[in-house]
Length: 407
Image (cartoon, rainbow, N blue to C red):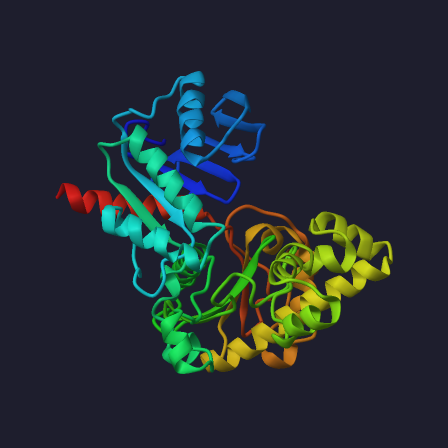
């Protein structure tokens, strides 16, 4: 039975035009309230909250993330909760870019706030919004610690060979160009869950070699050995790596110059095309994999090609990462597509029996809760579907920092 009196953490995820929030227990994951403020910065925004059987909504202007936090306060009151609840011991803020400096969650003081804003040069759509969300939340909850949990933290200790590009050294150092990665909170959470799962089955996980595939609208892969990340697909920005909902993933950098010279496109135009008008949406006009899989099954040529490109890139990363790791013990699928689209999992790993991967097609086709195995008992490589929970991970990390301040 969940303890209703146990400490709570308020998790804030400030995106470029939204603010997601959740109040939960870092101990057992009990969720008291969950919601989102949308269309931040636009003349007409909206917001909603769910708290058990209660719910509330808001419609009206949301000029910035500070106002979004005031709307969150209003929604809490509407469902009988309060941001002054003494059970709230910390506020955990998701921050996309922590640079090379922040490898762990940290209490947000003036210096940390400055650094997060300064790192907005590397993640302008996310870090500046995070600072606004931090300021708004601190104004409403000034007496509890506010903790930054960085998406890049899990990848700050990448081996130097993996972290660096073969770019002019002076330029790379001056403008902080290196591979930072993203989705690190999810990769950390999932790889830890995999290790715990395998340890419970009697496996020695001290050198466990796993590839984690975080497949959502944004998608990334990581190679993890013994709990430490040794490679990741996203780089300086979230554009690099796998094919995504609207992003190209890996692309010849000279295509930028080609589009500028031949199509007369500006840097801003090219950035928009590569990040917002490409990927699955750009190839077949769809980014929702429920629509894409239905179109593939119906024989749609554009959707079929897009799926083939998507899966081809996945197979390249699984293969290359198995060499980076020196072998492979586990492949873990997570996030919206990874957890819910059997076609993607099947096409990614089918025909790899010679490499020790044998998929159980019946298990793969089934839905279920919690961690589940979708490889056969004879498969040398264990294939898992692992639900991710970035909000719980942020709450747990923020909770640890808050407890350390109390002791």
